Amino acid sequence: MKDKLVIGNWKMNGNCEENQRLLAEALPELAAVTGVEVVVCPPFPYLAQVGAQLQGSPVSLGAQNVNAKERGAFTGEVSVPMLNDFECRFVLVGHSERRTLFGETDEMVAEKYAAALSGGVIPVLCVGETLEQRRAGLAENVIVGQLQAVASRVGGEAMAAGVIAYEPLWAIGTGESATPEQAQQIHGHIRQWLAGQLPSGTASPRLLYGGSLKADNAPALFAQPDIDGGLVGSAALEAQSFVTICRVAQ
Ligand code: PEP
Picture (cartoon, helix red, strand yellow):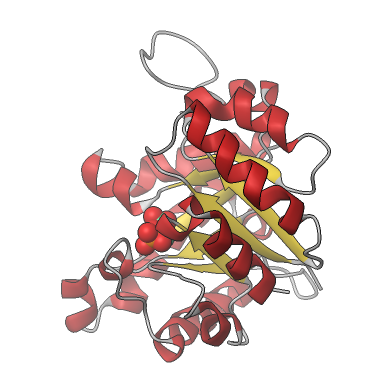
C-alpha cells in the first residue's frame, strides 16, 4: 500500500522570514512522522529557499501551478523543466482558484497534467464542484467530467501516475469542511471511476481530500476508506496545525 500523502498549499502567502520560521518549527517534528509522505508548495519565488531548507528532511517540495509549454514567450509563466531545476516532486494542476480566478479550462488542466507527467513531476489533479452544482445533484457528474478531460488527453492508464485531490469549492477557505460521509461518497465514486480506467491489478493513485481540513476534522476524514491524505490550505501556514494533520495521517 502507498504511504498516505499530505500536501501543504501555501497559496500566495509567506515571505523569506516567515517561511524560514514555519519550517524551522515544523521540520524537526515532521522528521518523526512515519508512513506519510509530506509535501509543501510555496509560491514560485521561494522554491529555492524552501528547497534548501528541506534538504536532509523527509519533506518534499511541490509547486502550485505550471505552464504546459517548455519555454518561450509566455511572460510570467513557469515550466516543468524549471520545476525540475528546483527538484519539485509534485505540482498542483487545476486548483479551483486557478480555474475560477484565472480562467483555466479542463483542456488547459489536461495539458498541464500531461506536461508534468512527461517531465517527471507528479501532477496533483484538483477537482471539485460548486455549491450550486452540489445542490442540483451534479457533484459526481462534474467531477467525472473534470477527470475525463484529463484521461482523454493522457489515456486512462496514466491516471495511476498522478494524485487526485477532491476539493469541493464550497469547502475551500470557508471553514466549512465536507463531512466525512460527503467526502467518502465522492472519493468512493472517483475510486470506482478509476477502476474502469486502469488495467486490473494497477494500483490506484492516492485520493486526497481538501477544503478546510484542520487538525480537529482530520481524524474523521482520514478514517474514511478512500481518503489517502489531504491537501491543506490555511492550516498549512501554522506549523503545529500542519504537523498535527500529518501525524493524524499516520
Ligand atoms: C486549498 O486551497 O487547496 C485548500 C484546501 O484550502 P483550505 O484548506 O484553506 O480550505
